[in-house]
Image (cartoon, rainbow, N blue to C red; front, side, top):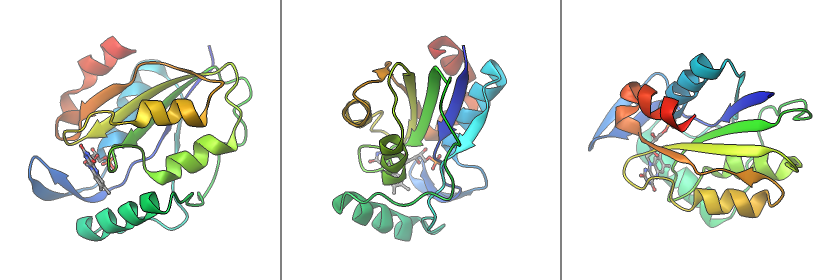
Length: 166
Ligand SMILES: Cc1cc2nc3c(=O)[nH]c(=O)nc-3n(C[C@H](O)[C@H](O)[C@H](O)COP(=O)(O)O)c2cc1C
């Protein structure tokens, strides 16, 4: 089965177990890398044309504003095609209870008829939030499987969790 890992992740300052740390690789990217190791599926990173600030508090405000406006931030690049891809591992951090708005931009661009979406999300306590419902709304023709919430601070030890979910 043709598979692809498509994810959003932000390196820079982040909140980890109650304190601010500078992450050189974002948590969701770490999880995406583990899925890549286990499945061999190629990885594609969703990057907004205008990235969120590396400074945590600024990023929080930017992301909140995008969500309030129901924005669709433009992406730097898109996968050429999803033709023939049957299963998509869709990864993102929980931002304000759902996905970053750039993931909404991506999901609205393609026809997901007949494709399976397996969402995985890293978070600091809210789990998947409303993201699975939001994906179903944006991609009514996709089969959206039960998602995998991963505590961002524990992502380095998440391999077994991921293995079972796969
Ligand atoms: C803008 C922003 C909003 C966030 N909102 C939430 C939230 O509502 N619930 C939660 O559990 N974690 C929230 N977090 C924490 C992230 O989901 C968590 O740190 C995640 O692992 C970051 O993934 P990344 O390093 O791949 O970007 C938020 C983080 C940011 C930067």
